[in-house]
Length: 371
Image 1: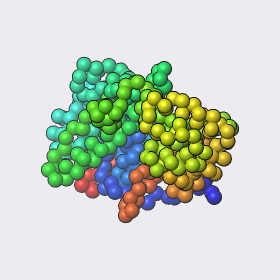
Image 2: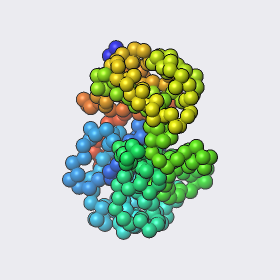
Image 3: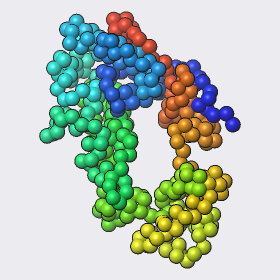
Image 4: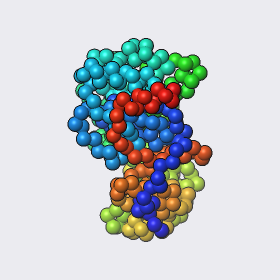
């Protein structure tokens, strides 16, 4: 089967669900650009305002689908141009520290006075208010104060979950949800509003299920002692004879039964699936079982069953997996393998659009004419 990553992505098609919406992005790093990538994939016209000489990579994955304008935000004439552009925009997204937009003369009060229906999306780590609002930080810090980092890792210490939980899960995705909700509301009320998306808030929200389980006495704060954090023998990652890894998630009894059948776990010790005291010993026995065969061997035995099994693939391997290839989950654009737009829409499909430089004056005229 030919990998989807080996096939050039189809030319962009008009008609994503956000076609007709216009968004102004103030260039930043991390969650802001990722959120705007998603909005651009879904058809929004996204204009990124970047500093002069930024030499923006127009082929970057997170920067795809934009019209890029370089200008000096310390220049009053440039600020006036930005205000003219925002007068005909639907949303603004910025990721500066609190107060920066206000000092530029582009704070919510000023901009919303010019365009009352504008959605003003603000992406920060600590939020617009609070004792730490002006402090520097990164994903690792924002998830540290929410209980998320403390719950992830080995019994000995927390382990970093890349920057998926704070920057992208708790940050970008909550920003996208907030901006889209505000755009929907603005269509009814004719009024915009500020969306304060803080990574610490989003990461805390992502922990909702675990706070729920803790309240019910089903979750402890000791890592590797719970059924979803590596404590259970039936939910985890195991090394194979080849040095590669597989994952199993046989939580439900019927799935656990299948795991036992396919892995040859006939010993009565495996009968008490939810006996937490037995988990460490059973986990060690499974270590030996899975090391007896290669990852490919286990795929041949378990993949596609209801065991809840999958090989642990690297970034270079993932696009070649038959399921990923069949769904075209990864595509190649300008020679760069990258994730395709998600989620998928049946009638107004998303598409990857090329980024390009643009003139702010011409854009403003186009937007005003289409208002």
